[in-house]
Length: 101
Image 1 (cartoon, helix red, strand yellow):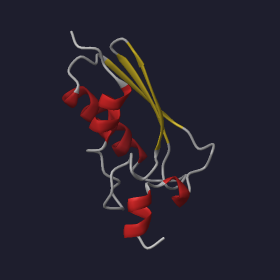
Image 2: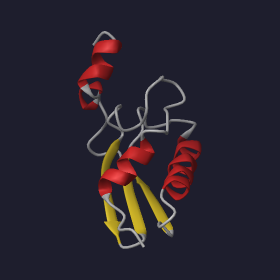
Image 3: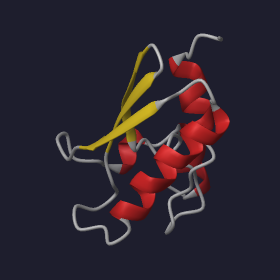
C-alpha cells in the first residue's frame, strides 16, 4: 500500500473548481490545511463567502475527488472554517493576475 502524502491530496483537490470562479480551490487559497493520518485525510477549508449556498456541494466534491484519485484513502473529513476569513490575497499569484487583482 502506497503512503498517502499531503502533496497527493493537494493535487487531487486541484480538480475541484469553485462553481462561481473558473479556478480550483487550491489555487484560490480555499484550502487552509491537509492532515494525513495513515488512510485518513482531514481537509480544513473555507469558502469565498460565509453564506455560500454551494457549501455542501463543495464539501461533497472534495470528499469524492480525494477518494477517487487516491484509492488508499478510506476516510475523508472536511472541516469548514471561517477564521481567518478568506480574502483574494490567499489566491495564487497567477490567479490574481488573471483576475486583474
